[in-house]
Image (tube, rainbow, N blue to C red; front, side, top):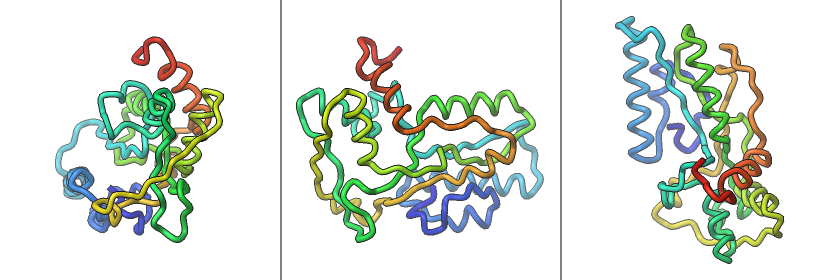
Length: 212
C-alpha cells in the first residue's frame, strides 16, 4: 500500500496520511481504500469491534506458499530452480542507485508474522493499523546467497531484464517502520534473513514433506 516508497513506510492510521499514499496496483489500492474506510469510522467515533487490527505484511516467505505459482517468495523459487539444475534468476536493476540484485525489500519469516498475530490475540486492548516487517531491508542477492548457503552450494545467478510492463511500477526499496508495534509492547526480536531461510530450506523445502 506504500507505493513507490516516496512517502515512507510509516504505519500512520490517520485518514490524511493514508490518503497521501499511492499504491502501484489495484491490489494495493484495495487495501488502502479499506484502511481509509477504517480511519473514517474511528475518526467519526462510529461503533467498532472490541478489538480490531490491520497488519501490513511486507515480503513474507515461508512454508505452504507453493500454490502461489509466480507469486511465491524468491527463496522458494530459487530453491526449486536449483533443484532443477538451473541458475537462480533475478531482475536486473534499471535504477542508477542499485546494482543488479541490490534491490532491497523487508523480507520477513512467516513464523514472525504468526508471532505478531498471536501477540495481538493475547493483547485484546491493542487495536490499530500496524506494519509487520523486520524493520531491516535486505537485497534479493542476499536471499539467493542464503538459499545457496543453506544447501551448501556456490551461488549461480542469472540476471534478466525487468519486464517493460512493470518496470515503471517496480519498487527498489521497502523497509517497515516498526516503531508503532514496538510502542504498544511487542518486543520479540525478528528472525534474521539467514536464519529464516535456513529454517525454511532445512525444515520444509528440502524435507520429504514440505507442508508439515
